[in-house]
Length: 296
Image (tube, rainbow, N blue to C red; front, side, top):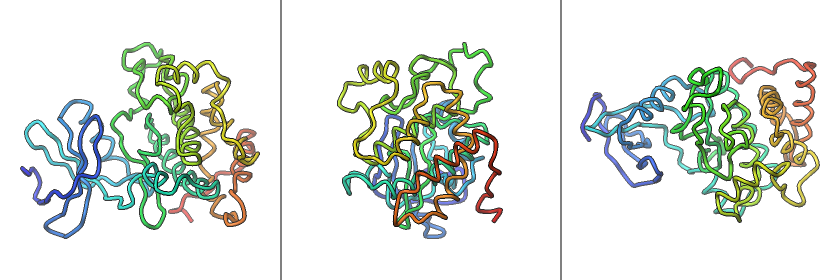
């Protein structure tokens, strides 16, 4: 691997493949650290992803380590998440319980809160883009279609604003209708991800993508799994509010659920009541902000 830094890496096995490139494990020959290397054909969009990764530092976002330009390719060196994605883990264990999904969701929301505070939209939240470690920590990954909100025009009429990006079954209705994205689009996708982790598939997966997109726009909300708790149902309906501005408001106050659920007895229940009550209190402006981990 041609180097533009003083660090040398040796590529290992391929651990991922997407439409935009390959991901391998790699060994840092100076320290022995195992990392992940994402190889992409260099383009303006790739430079944008790299710029975002460099500035994002949070416990629930995959860490940027290094980058290496090699001809017309860019190798982005990232923290190695040994357990892979929640999608692959879900496949191995035939879905997760509500209580376990609650633990994963609080961490995901903590990462999303940080992203949105930085003015960044992920735009492709799904199980495959949430990585996990052996100890159960989860981190957001794959910022290939992420965008800074400052890049969107105020009118919402630019070509960039109208780009339909993301994965069809997780896509918010306003994105399908080519409206300007907001943080609410990530929250809709998170709701779809919750269903994916509970059932093994996102809503409308039995349909062809175009039919699914039509149903997402036309239906009051995606079909909810049978047998879920009332509190989880309430939480999902908050995620699936067709009014993106109200969904955005819910997102802006969901940031404290990690603290509340950690304080809940997750062995005896999923803790969704705490989540929903927190959202409602914040919507009324009657709950103070909980501290971050680093503030406690």
